[in-house]
Length: 136
Image (cartoon, rainbow, N blue to C red; front, side, top):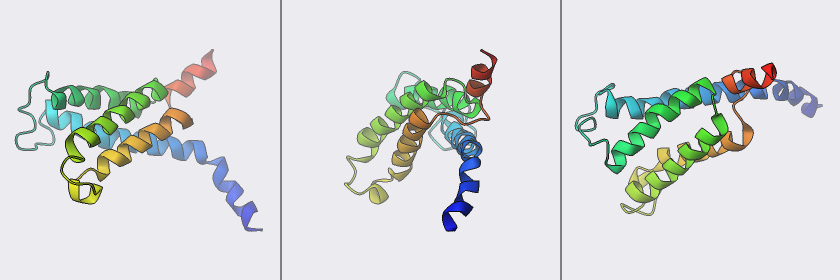
């Protein structure tokens, strides 16, 4: 009886995946805009060199998150961003302490695995990838 009620939810899974992708992309976009557009303003963050590791990460955050929000080339972009967040965790957070809550890396881990999820699950129905697939 209960299982039948949950079948309704599976019908909307692709839509919910699209919402998760868009919200994740918009939140991730803030990291890139803070570094390159000083919006939102984070003291000292926008003064980094574009050729530094945080600067290169900022480019990936800025450009990659736009692709994620649009659902364009979602799987390869999500794979790159997942790797970026894994490197960010091990490079910037893990050396501080072994526990993510203490080293401030829980968000990097979460982004890493959410992007890894999109690598395998795809973007959902509300995406440019889905639109391009249906027109072929």
